[in-house]
View 1 (cartoon, rainbow, N blue to C red):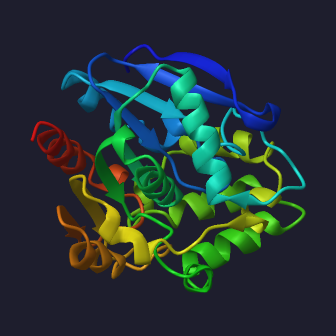
View 2 (cartoon, rainbow, N blue to C red; view 1 turned 120 degrees about the vertical axis):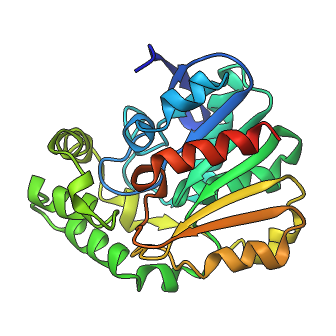
Length: 270
């Protein structure tokens, strides 16, 4: 893997956001999703090299509450909190315009940033993006229901971690013991509030405001976010295209990494 440089940036309310970077060229920011143990590098390890080789500067932040970033307790983890602290960190990191690549919650954060600061966003690449349904719909999905139940308990174990990560994909054999151990080490440092007090709005009524080109991916066996969400973009946005994959779960960028990388790079090149 290309050499990754890590920096920490002070953001609002005294928090710190960890930002990893590799490659050079136009900036592409990868925004990871939620879940115990999530981080920028662990979510996108199979994608980094292809984008660097294609000539892009890859930015891999850890969201507040995740990875090596600050993990405050006793607060609501709102979409504004995620988006605002990420933007603070990106500006401190010298990023003034970028393509945003977002998976799950990371997709919702990318949408919020694109709505708040459209001049900052060149293009959007979304994989099963969140924040386009009411919260109750998401929490009724089997993957999210199991994640909240297992992580909310007092004795979250590495077996719980293995089960949760395996639920992200259609074929669990693609999940390595090393990835499970890496994410479990992070999960043990996370407050329960990061899931129990997550608060995200439904941005679907605002999708028509997005004028930048959008490329999306969705696995038809996604247990976390309903694949019907792709239609919301196709119906509302002026420049959107989505691909759906059979026998693929929530992590298209992992289960179909070669195709995801190829289609995304072609999209970036216009």
